[in-house]
Image (tube, rainbow, N blue to C red; front, side, top):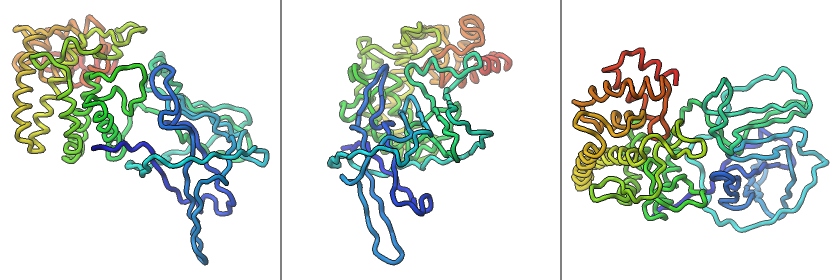
Length: 434
C-alpha cells in the first residue's frame, strides 16, 4: 500500500563552480545513510555500505552532449573530511586536501536496488558568512551545538553519546570555504517549512506502521535494536498529533486525508482495558520521559504516573480524531469517535480526579495535561488551578519547570489558564526562570 523512499538524489549545475575542471571530485561520508544510528553504541550501515551513484551531463554549444555515469573507471581516495555522522558532527582537516600526493584506489560496482527520488523539501541555504581575522596552520575551530545552557555552557549532558560537534582544522593556505554536508544540528529556535521534510517523514511513518500491523515505531525510520515493537503513548500519538498540527498551521486538508489510515490504525492497535483506557498489562511506558526529577540512571522513572500520562494523551487524540473525521466528512467515524471520546473522558475523570476537582498526581505534568486537554470540567478548572498553585509551583520545584516529554509542550499553555487564579508575576517567574 505504501512505499518507503530511502534514497534521495540531488542535482547541481557545476560549470560555473569549476569552469576549467578536467575532473570532478565528489565527497561521500557515512552521514545518515550508513553512519551510527540508534541508542547507546547504535548500529551502522542501516541502509547499506558507503557508496556513490552519480551522473554527469556535459552540454556543448557546438556538438552533442555526453553523459558520464559512475562505473569501474572511477577511483577513490581519502580527503579532508575525516569523519561525518548525523549525531557526532563532522571533522574537516584542510591539511588533507586532495593533491598530486593523494593515493587513489579502484572502486567496486554494484547494481542499483533502491528507488531513487528527489527530496520534497527545499535545499539548505547559506544565510551568513563570517570573515576570520587570521587563519593559522594547525589551529582547530570547534562548533558545539546544544539546545540549552547549563552553568553558562552548552548543555551536552542530555546528548548522551552524541557529540553534536563540528571541527575544522586549518591549513593556513589560501581561502577555505567549508560547511557541514553530512550532518544536521538542532538550534534553540527553528522555522521549518513542513511541506518537504515532515511530509516525507510521515510517509516513512505510515510505511513502517503498516509493516508493524498498525504500531508506530519509537523512532522513524526504525533503527533501534533490542526493543520489541510495542505500542507507546505519545510516541505513537504523533501519528495523529503531527498531521493535526500541520493542518492547523496550513489549513491543508490533504495532510489529514493522506494520514487518515495511519491515524485510525494507531487508535485501533492501542492495547486497552474494557473501559477503553490503556491496558495495565501493556508494555513498559515511557510516560513523562526525561522528567528532571527522575534518577539519572532511570530516565523513565518520572514523578507522574505513566498510565495517567498515557490515558491523558489517549483522551486528547480521540477527541482530535472526532474533529478530523468531521473535517474529512467521514460520517460513520464521526459518530464512533464522538462516543469513544465522551466515554474515555468520563472514565478518566472517574479514575483520576475527585468530586472536589483534585487530580491523582500532584505534579506539573499532570496539571499541564489536565488543564490543556480539558480533562477537568470547565467549572472546576479555577478551583483546580487554585488548589495546586502552591503545591505545584511554589513547593515541589520552586519556580522551576519540572516536566518531561509529556508535560513540557503544554506547561506554558496550562500556566496561561492558571492566570485566572494566579497573579501575572507568578506566571512570568515560572515561565522565565525555569
